[in-house]
Length: 127
Image (cartoon, rainbow, N blue to C red; front, side, top):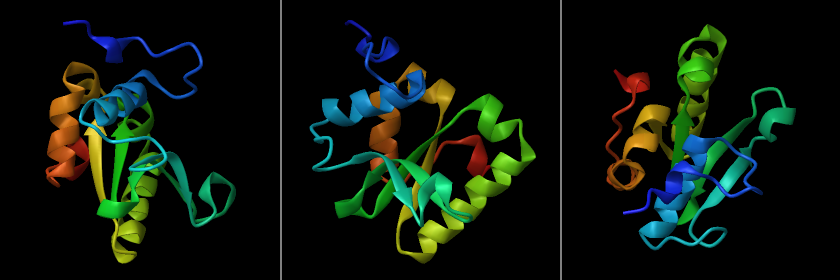
Protein backbone atom coordinates (compact mmCIF):
# COMPACT_ATOMS: atom_id res chain seq x y z
CA UNK A 1 0.00 0.00 0.00
CA UNK A 2 1.29 3.44 -0.91
CA UNK A 3 1.53 5.66 2.13
CA UNK A 4 0.04 8.74 0.45
CA UNK A 5 -0.27 10.64 3.71
CA UNK A 6 3.51 10.86 4.07
CA UNK A 7 3.98 13.20 1.11
CA UNK A 8 1.67 16.22 1.01
CA UNK A 9 0.95 17.75 -2.38
CA UNK A 10 3.03 20.74 -3.36
CA UNK A 11 0.19 23.21 -2.76
CA UNK A 12 -0.47 21.97 0.82
CA UNK A 13 0.11 24.85 3.23
CA UNK A 14 -0.06 22.94 6.52
CA UNK A 15 2.24 20.49 8.28
CA UNK A 16 2.84 16.87 7.25
CA UNK A 17 0.88 15.53 10.26
CA UNK A 18 -2.05 17.83 9.36
CA UNK A 19 -1.91 16.51 5.80
CA UNK A 20 -2.03 12.94 7.15
CA UNK A 21 -5.20 13.73 9.11
CA UNK A 22 -6.79 15.57 6.15
CA UNK A 23 -5.97 12.57 3.95
CA UNK A 24 -7.39 10.12 6.52
CA UNK A 25 -10.64 12.08 6.86
CA UNK A 26 -11.11 11.90 3.09
CA UNK A 27 -10.21 8.20 3.00
CA UNK A 28 -13.05 7.37 5.37
CA UNK A 29 -15.46 9.27 3.16
CA UNK A 30 -15.65 12.76 4.67
CA UNK A 31 -15.65 15.71 2.29
CA UNK A 32 -13.61 18.91 2.82
CA UNK A 33 -15.76 22.01 3.35
CA UNK A 34 -18.89 19.83 3.57
CA UNK A 35 -18.06 17.48 6.45
CA UNK A 36 -14.96 19.17 7.84
CA UNK A 37 -13.24 22.54 7.77
CA UNK A 38 -9.45 22.77 7.82
CA UNK A 39 -7.99 25.60 9.94
CA UNK A 40 -11.33 26.84 11.25
CA UNK A 41 -10.98 30.16 13.14
CA UNK A 42 -12.99 30.43 16.35
CA UNK A 43 -13.59 33.58 18.42
CA UNK A 44 -11.52 35.67 16.01
CA UNK A 45 -8.88 33.04 15.28
CA UNK A 46 -5.21 33.85 15.75
CA UNK A 47 -5.83 37.56 15.24
CA UNK A 48 -8.01 38.02 18.32
CA UNK A 49 -6.89 37.77 21.93
CA UNK A 50 -8.51 34.61 23.28
CA UNK A 51 -9.20 33.33 19.77
CA UNK A 52 -8.21 29.94 18.44
CA UNK A 53 -7.89 27.94 15.24
CA UNK A 54 -9.15 24.37 15.11
CA UNK A 55 -7.06 22.23 12.79
CA UNK A 56 -10.13 20.24 11.71
CA UNK A 57 -13.67 21.17 12.66
CA UNK A 58 -16.53 18.77 11.95
CA UNK A 59 -19.60 20.98 12.58
CA UNK A 60 -22.23 18.24 12.18
CA UNK A 61 -20.49 16.23 14.89
CA UNK A 62 -19.59 19.24 17.07
CA UNK A 63 -16.04 17.86 17.04
CA UNK A 64 -12.61 19.39 16.57
CA UNK A 65 -9.45 17.41 15.86
CA UNK A 66 -6.20 19.21 16.59
CA UNK A 67 -2.77 17.86 15.68
CA UNK A 68 -0.20 18.21 18.45
CA UNK A 69 3.45 18.59 17.46
CA UNK A 70 6.13 17.66 19.95
CA UNK A 71 8.04 20.92 19.54
CA UNK A 72 5.25 23.46 19.46
CA UNK A 73 2.55 21.90 21.62
CA UNK A 74 4.50 19.94 24.22
CA UNK A 75 7.85 21.69 24.56
CA UNK A 76 6.47 25.19 25.12
CA UNK A 77 4.52 25.88 28.30
CA UNK A 78 2.54 28.77 26.80
CA UNK A 79 1.35 26.51 23.95
CA UNK A 80 0.27 23.79 26.39
CA UNK A 81 -1.74 26.34 28.35
CA UNK A 82 -3.27 27.77 25.17
CA UNK A 83 -4.29 24.28 24.02
CA UNK A 84 -6.04 23.56 27.31
CA UNK A 85 -7.77 26.96 27.32
CA UNK A 86 -8.92 26.36 23.74
CA UNK A 87 -10.25 22.95 24.70
CA UNK A 88 -12.11 24.42 27.69
CA UNK A 89 -13.59 27.21 25.55
CA UNK A 90 -14.72 24.75 22.86
CA UNK A 91 -16.25 22.38 25.41
CA UNK A 92 -18.12 25.38 26.82
CA UNK A 93 -19.56 25.91 23.33
CA UNK A 94 -20.52 22.24 23.05
CA UNK A 95 -17.60 21.27 20.80
CA UNK A 96 -15.53 18.24 21.82
CA UNK A 97 -11.79 18.57 21.12
CA UNK A 98 -9.65 15.51 20.42
CA UNK A 99 -5.89 15.84 20.06
CA UNK A 100 -3.81 13.59 17.81
CA UNK A 101 -0.05 13.59 18.41
CA UNK A 102 2.09 14.13 15.32
CA UNK A 103 3.84 10.76 15.62
CA UNK A 104 0.45 8.99 15.68
CA UNK A 105 -0.81 11.02 12.72
CA UNK A 106 2.22 9.96 10.71
CA UNK A 107 2.19 6.33 11.85
CA UNK A 108 -1.45 5.39 11.20
CA UNK A 109 -3.66 8.37 10.40
CA UNK A 110 -6.81 6.40 9.54
CA UNK A 111 -6.74 4.53 12.86
CA UNK A 112 -6.29 7.71 14.91
CA UNK A 113 -8.96 9.59 12.98
CA UNK A 114 -11.41 6.73 13.58
CA UNK A 115 -10.48 6.85 17.26
CA UNK A 116 -11.04 10.62 17.32
CA UNK A 117 -14.44 10.21 15.67
CA UNK A 118 -15.28 7.73 18.44
CA UNK A 119 -14.16 10.44 20.93
CA UNK A 120 -11.11 8.47 22.06
CA UNK A 121 -8.07 10.68 22.65
CA UNK A 122 -4.66 8.96 22.74
CA UNK A 123 -2.59 12.13 22.97
CA UNK A 124 -0.05 13.06 25.61
CA UNK A 125 -2.15 16.17 26.21
CA UNK A 126 -4.80 14.15 28.00
CA UNK A 127 -2.50 12.00 30.11
